[in-house]
Image 1 (cartoon, rainbow, N blue to C red):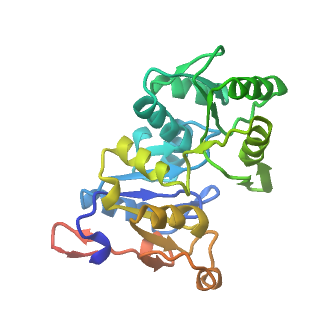
Image 2 (cartoon, rainbow, N blue to C red; image 1 turned 180 degrees about the vertical axis):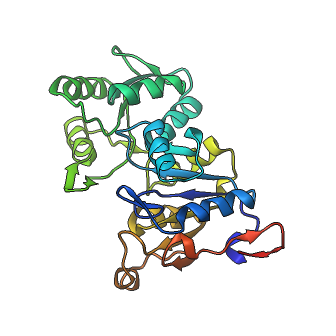
Length: 266
């Protein structure tokens, strides 16, 4: 019961945790239903800022998960929450796909192409030389540099794609300005996701399959976590790592949660 004492909500990684590629992990949808039955708030979180919440919501819905668009929090959504609450009245130059830029605007980000206070770098699959050069000039002129996440590569079904990590390194080296990172493993992701979900971040539980992002974020934020072995991390990798979670499970289907109807676990 220690894992669930006074829990405010659950944050779940997606790929490797509740699904693998286009296939749901056995029992994962039922686990989410049990969270719902127990009145435990939950959200699906991802570092991937190349797509909107609706993209992931539709994917989860097709797989049978009880989800809403508001229960999906990408690192772009977390960045929008940060800018809206911590950088009030700021204007932001956004490097993002048209769909993600539109979502950022809908979340309250004041987007501009001239004299911004902030340059926000997302995983922009529509990146051009012009965008990158504009970002370089704006950061050099004093704009704050914010990036949605630090990942170097994005896993795909046929290998890996270049993610935004190399662009962060490039802009940092050109401008001498260090980026503020929002996404996992930075605890800012937890804080912003918790604000969006309206839960106490200090009492949240993180569930994920990666030691160096999901579990490290939880460890650095000093919150409870569950490592699931259904995705990237193997038992041998866990045994060789200094990063430890509160609990370990083969998959989310094996995690017991409180049953408010019986005061027991199920």
